[in-house]
Structure formats: structure tokens, C-alpha cells
Length: 183
Length: 183
DNA sequence: TCATGGCGTTTAATATAATTGTCAATTGCG
DNA sequence: CGCAATTGACAATTATATTAAACGCCATGA
Image 1 (cartoon, each protein chain N blue to C red):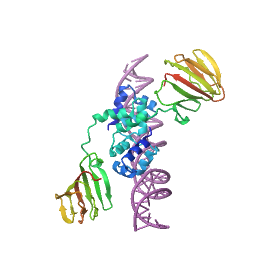
Image 2: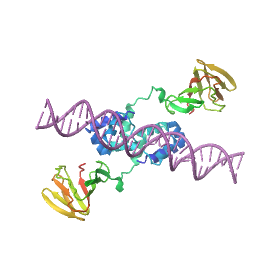
Image 3: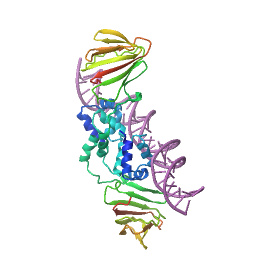
Image 4: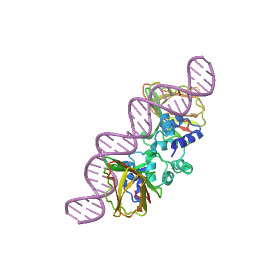
């Protein structure tokens, strides 16, 4: 969603300066500078003012670059979606990407010492799998329990009851995947 | 631009509560409550998050109700666009409606005592006309000067040099019209 | 060469949106 | 009927966008 570049290109097309457009839209040149640099996300009201002043409709504005927009492929660590915030001994679940746009959900899970997901009876279609990246963790699936160390992994049907417990004194990190998403 | 109602109807359509949608979008229920009540204008980023979580595209969202949207007809005094802010003895120009969506531009002009537009040589196509609503003002057009009082008016070709001066000790208010717009 | 004016950017102050922690009203269940 | 859970709304705080006023840059011209 590179709104800044899009706005800038349209503005240039019409031969408008930031100040000219700002005056017409009832904003300031500084604001337009920030928006074009993607250093702020304008309110819908502000964007509407700008597009009205150009003029171009909201639908037009967004439609034109939804075609050219490539789906997001790469995610920096800070771009993960926090499902559970973690901290204070709680499990931290951080999802790769956003909501349910994909058939595959990948999580970065952190289990502090003593962390326990509890025996929740999750019952979704699909499969879950993961690999321990650091530390060790006790995994119980449908009654069977195993201690997995770094490099180990698991794979089971999502409908089976399962539980994760870190009984060690070291934080455990797991990368897991589900399909379809359960969150 | 009743974004609130639109968002609400789409959300209801999908059987989502404000809290559910908030969780998926990474916002809070309170925010959605405010947006749906049109008590705040969400940032483009926030709106995108919400629509992604539903999911529906920005273009789709805006296109659907741009059809049903009726052009704005009525304007409250505070909705006028300030062309020159006025204050400190300066002329205040306030335009009915927004930028150049219309062939007709109507202004609410306030001239404090001593105010003077100066002999600017404006040279646009079209005509300008106005009626004095309160006070009195000296109008000079192409060399001819006249003092207009409340109820009086003027009409001239935009290409003629013109000047407005309030030589009285009372604030003068004029309602004027231009076609096509010069701002 | 030095002013002048227009451009886009940056910054501190201000206005506005978003969050957090409630609330009363509603819904579903025992 | 209560009781618990869930809903949308609200007030106070926090976070963010927007403003207004600077800045540096580049062109133009005296």
C-alpha cells in the first residue's frame, strides 16, 4: 500500500506542487510531504480532501494500484502479528503475515520456563506441525507425551487434543505451521 | 462519506462483533465503535487493517457507496472553505463548497475597516458579480469607482482589473460569485 | 555575486485518533 | 427468573496525525 508514491505520481501528473494541492485540500504542505514519504498514514477524511482537490475518486485511487500491487512475500520480525503478547511467563505466539488471507498459518512461538498452554480442546480441521528451534519442550498429543529438543519436531491432526509445556529452566522457541488457520 | 454505516453493515453481514473484527484487525472494539458512529475518521492504515480482516478490498469498499452517494448540496457556515483566513484587518474570503468541482464559485467575503485587496491584475476568463450584504465598500473596476452599500451589487468581466476597499469604519460583508473559478 | 522565490523536507507544538478500562443493556442458559 | 457471558458505548489516557514555522536546495535574474 504505497499511498505516498501513488499520491505523488498523481499530483505530479497534474503539475501541482505540494503547496498548491495543500491549499485546495485545506491541509498543509508539510502534511503532504509526510504522507508522500509514507511517514504518516492520513485519515480517510484527509485523503478524501486531497483526492477531491485533484480531483479523483477514492475508488479510482485505490483500484488503480491494487492491480499493480504485488502480494507481500517478505516479513521482518517486527511485522509479525502478535496473537498472544507473551511476557510475564506467558506463551508468546507471533504469526507470519496477517489474518486469514492464506491457507497456511506459520507461527513463531516462545515458551518461557514454566509456560503451559493448558489442555485446551481445539477441534479444527487440518494439521499442525512444528520444529523446536531453541531449548526443549514437552508436547502431549492425544495422551502421548514427548520431550522435544532443538531440531526435533511434531506433526498431528488438529482435532486431537494437545498441550505444550516448558518444564525446563530455559526459554523454548518453536516455529510451527497450521492449515487451515485456526485463529 | 458515511464510512461508519458502511463498515457496520459489512461487518454485520459477516456476523462479526466489533470485538471479533477488532482482534483480527489488530485494533480495539472501542475504535470500531467510534468509527462506526462516524465520531472519528480512521487512518487509511487502520481502515485497511479492518477491510483486510473482513476481508474486502479498499477499491471495493469505496466503489460500492460512491454510487449511492448523493452530491453535497447544503453547506453549513463552518463547512465553507477558507481561501484567505482574514483577521488582523485583512480580507476574509470563504468559498461555498470545495475546490473546482463546479462551474460556479460563490464566496462569502468580509472586509474589515481599511481592508484593501490591492490593484492586482487578475486576468481569468469569465465573469464576477456580487451583492453587498452589510456595510459599504468602494469598488474600482477598469478605472471606474463606486461606493456600494448594503443591497447594491456589481457585475464585470473577470479580465478587467478590479479592486475592493473598505474606507468606512464598519465591517463590510459581500456575497460574490465567479465563473469559472479563479482559485 | 548576491538576492529572491519556489520547491520539498524537517521539527516542535497542537489537534486528533486509538487504547484502555469500564459501563448498562442484551442474550442465553440453568 | 437470577447469573454469566457478550454486546456496543463511553471517559480518560496514550499514541499519532496535522499544523506552523523553520530549513536547505536549486533556479532565475538583477
